[in-house]
Figure 1 (cartoon, rainbow, N blue to C red):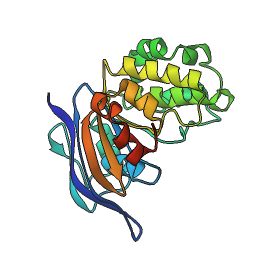
Figure 2: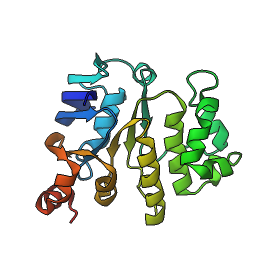
Figure 3: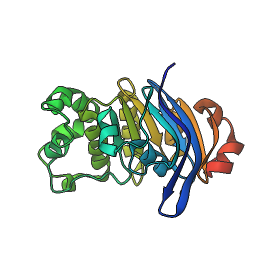
Figure 4: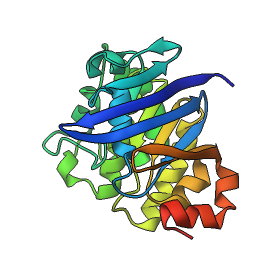
Length: 234
């Protein structure tokens, strides 16, 4: 299987702090790959390094065979990478429709994707004219993911989609991500190991800014010792 994304030994600094000290990973096309680790391990910085918001000082990031590190974030996004940040970043004063429209890269992007988006997230159709601030936390998360589907993205970087959500809402997000994986490749940062292990094909564990383990998710799910050591989950 071809890798849509390859990250090779990246080192990323934020100010004077050396956050990523050697992170490497491969994301096969058509997969859901989970990036796991404790709080502060460097997971979010890895996503931000890929998309160009925190450019690596060393190492290499390749998307569809093309080196992208060192390019500005808007250029990287235009290649077909959607970024769903932590804490959703929904525009609370804009309607659902307006939140989706601003994600268009070209005219009629939304019109071409609306049927699929509403099939995956039916609540968004129901509340199309409501403002983002009137949505529940789960609906805001759905809107945040849906925005990344408006343009023609082949890879989604999704950061902590289950954070702060009730278990029943997390189940809805899981079902939506499964549906999305039929169309796009996903690199998922997720603190909820139960959720991540239920949908991801492969995993990488980051600890203290370094990639320390990788493999098939089903193997990690069976390795309680490794899960407890690096994730604090049983």
